[in-house]
Image 1 (cartoon, chains in turn cyan, purple):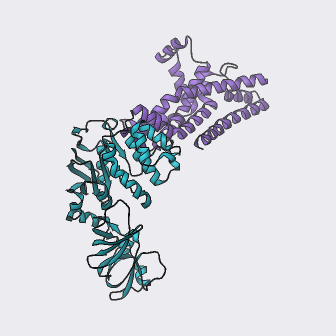
Image 2 (image 1 turned 90 degrees about the horizontal axis):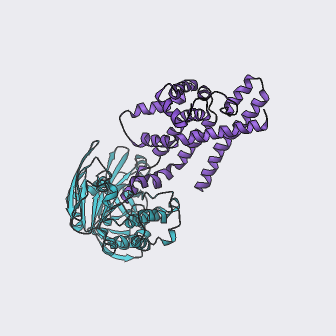
Length: 342
Length: 223
């Protein structure tokens, strides 16, 4: 069993989070500032101001120094040692079979002699994961492991991450604000909101809960739709929402088909006339329902493609496009701006 | 003054500069690390005290050092026992004076170098099972090397040019304690301006070679 029960007052932020799980892979899910990374760092022993217990494999690690905990922490920015090569980074953690298997599985052999500073973001992330695995950890702590990895590489890394618990015998806990990532990689999820675990359990059930929806709204996904996959081609999924709106979204191999999709209001472009030759895969004709000025921005409510949409634009765009209630407008949404979350 | 005399003064200056730098290397780097990474009672006072030799008149530092090294004091007696004779008016006294004046430069250089090294990398190393000594030697030190090398170079160059404190505790004994700075002063006093200029040129060359040499070494290392 793995569990944490942590408390701390960090400035104005109160952390009071507890969760426990049995499976080999779990996730902490929440918006920025919800306390996910703090929990991961506290589990690694790097937050002395955080009190409570951290139990991995039945052993309470709280009194142990970071070096004795054997928790393979992979920070979001990878934090490779810049004065070493990729090989030097991995060797620092340990040599032997665990390191070599991680190197092969993460396809790192051609990169081993490269300086850390000469690696791309995705390459750095893979080396950091291999380095953590080389230390033969009892639990792998991954902070947003796919945040700096591009989509083609993500498709290659995801299957490897999925296999880590079974193939290398290392359970993992990952931090993510991407529900799709959580669904692909974890069998248990704890939803965090302002330092507290507000829901925990099986990800498929959790992402349909009100608690998770609240977090998604906090993430800024104002447009949420039930959806089903109606066709698939290379790199693209064709979806249909519950109200019959057809959408094309970029797919990632290894990730399950989405049952819900989200689009951020700021990711929607508006056009006064049907555009020609644009790269956006989704162009929907609609009618403006209302304008809601908020600070320096204007939220435009639109009925389009059978669904209700919210787009976020500047007051200047409203003026230039003569956007007003009742007027026609066209929504432009990139396939990459449609995020799956359950 | 013959070429041989000039060479002797130059070598003595280099020896005093090197010994002074070696004397302060460990304590200054350790103090720089403590000031950059630790919070302890009296830290601000220590920080101020470290910087004092940079702002005090060098002769005042020399006077304090004189009292410290005098055989009439406890420290002086211990040093006299260790060295088997009086330390004042020897090249060792000159090295100690140079060390005292260079100390703040190395402490502050080291402090800045350690402060600029990301703690996150040290934390990663700790979670990978590394001991504190290994974290320091294999992560902190290499990542701080550039700043440390700069601090070390300026401390060495400062030691080469030390004058006021050295004159108080080591005097100006030709062949024994007469460094380049003291020799330049002596030649000016004796109206031997040509020799003073020649010695100044050597002094400038030494400082330039030290700083440029360190820069070239660091560039080659970073390439």
